[in-house]
Image (cartoon, rainbow, N blue to C red; front, side, top):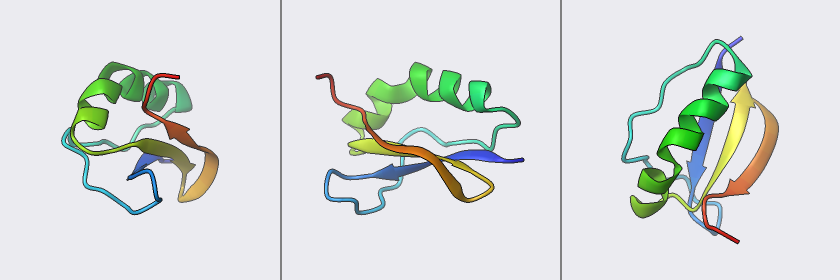
Length: 67
């Protein structure tokens, strides 16, 4: 399994993240990474993220903005 993130603007357009993403071997590693970098990602133009497992959506889009 390869866990990855998709990065989008608020209208769903794909954006290139300012922090180079990785492929993760576990969901927990992927979630920890986005938890550590969400502010940089948001400040760099990503409004939301979607978690993928081998290309299939696990959940999201999830906002990177505080409620």
